[in-house]
Length: 175
Image 1 (cartoon, rainbow, N blue to C red):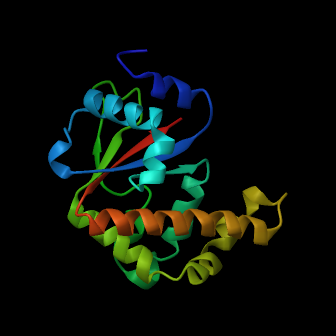
Image 2 (image 1 turned 90 degrees about the vertical axis):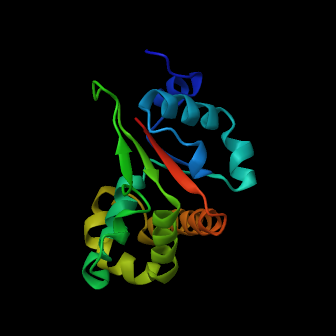
C-alpha cells in the first residue's frame, strides 16, 4: 500500500465508513497524499477527537443517509441536501485507485449546518422511506429510522459546532 498511514489499512479491513474531521481551513493542503496521512492520523486518534467535538463518523449507512437527504431536493430546490454526505470539493489520487477526499470550506460547512437545522428529519424520512427501507427489511422500521435519526442528530451537532468555529471539514470514505 503506497505511503498511507496505519489508520487507512486498519479501517479498510473493518468496514465501510465516512469519516469527518473539522480543521482550520489554513491547515488543509489540497494534496491527496497529504490528506490520506492527515485523515489516517485523525482516525488513529478518532475517539479523542470525537470527544473533543472535531470528528464524526457514519458507519456503513452513509449512502442510505444520503438518500434520506436527497428527499429534500424537491422541497429545498437547491444542492444543500448533498453537502452533509457527498458534497464538497473532491481531491483525487493521481491514479484514482482510491476514493477521493472531500473538502468543505467554512462557507459550505455553514450551508450544510443550515440545511441540517432547517430540514425536518420526519419529513425527510417519510419522503425517503420507500427507497431507504427495502435493504433493511429484516429490521423493524422504527429501529431503522432510529439509526438514521441518530446519524442525522450527530451530523447536525458536528456541522453546527464546526460552522460556529469557522472551520472547514475534510471527509474520508474508507472502503
